[in-house]
Image (cartoon, rainbow over all chains, first blue to last red; front, side, top):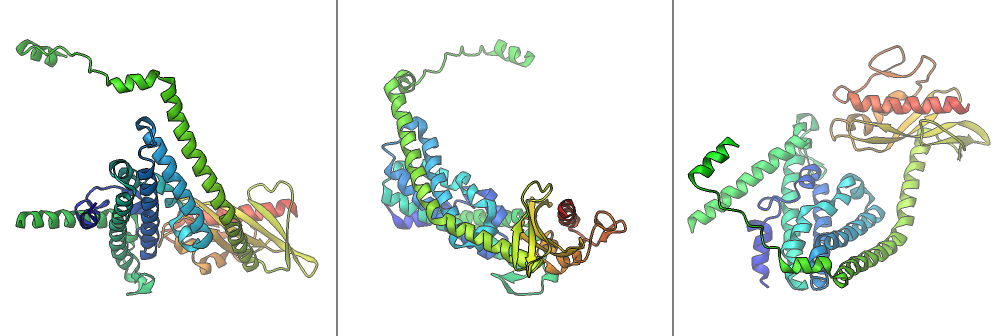
Length: 199
Length: 210
């Protein structure tokens, strides 16, 4: 186990959104305000860590042939729990994230980490992997929602930066999500090639 | 086809032998004990998950229900303040629920819960209607309209308040047209029409029970 390496993978070299290109649907849909980004990032990080731990614990119990079904049940269980808890204790976040919380079940970040990491590693390493990948996902959501909220609504985490009349409303729409994500992926690729080229 | 045969003339295609089946897979397909293990493991995981979910639901359900109820009640008090709201029993076509508002022991009108169709999904709203059949207020409790477009209608109480006083005396309310006209928000026509349809449904339901 190597925490430094896993952190680097989660944030940069194997970033779930910008490099592995996983979980695009929720990434594009919910990154309209920073509050949404935090809520979604935290939810995914918690669910990813929990599902990684349990799938790692069960890795010798679950037969190869039914592993995907078993993973989905474990993931869906945690997602439903988080959904219920959010609705009960953070109704505002639950309302603005809406259908995207239940949809975390099919967020491929979680299934991909279960299949490619948790099912082959010890629980502690799987937990660290869940946290690192989850944080990598959250950071990208925060950057995207920051850009889209400032440009699209003229506010930063709810505080007005410039009057909403001058905001490019398009940035809050799916179009703005695709543009922001495309630019970020390109920047990431450019930065990575540059670093590799320098070595 | 012709391209294929040409190729085969030049260099004969290697005869395909069936890919060797992995031995383990064949065995699992026939061993009943192994099938039992597959099903048993899945069943076990499902059972544990279901039990845990049941426990979480026990904790969260009262809070979620209370929050929903408080929200609807606040919306009802906003559109038509009254001492009490009595549910109207029986069929109330077009609306989710219909309540008779009671103020000082006398009926003060009706409050209808309506689920109208917006541009992105359902718009759940509460519409107050007074004894004469005129709208006393509209409040949107849940929606999934596009931010900065549909929300110019459903999240702007000023726009929703334009329905106040409208009735079915001059026929159904129509958006940007007709004599019983509601001025929609430009750019959010579908949402405007959705909300107007909800108000129409509420007015029709109230007429049905009056």
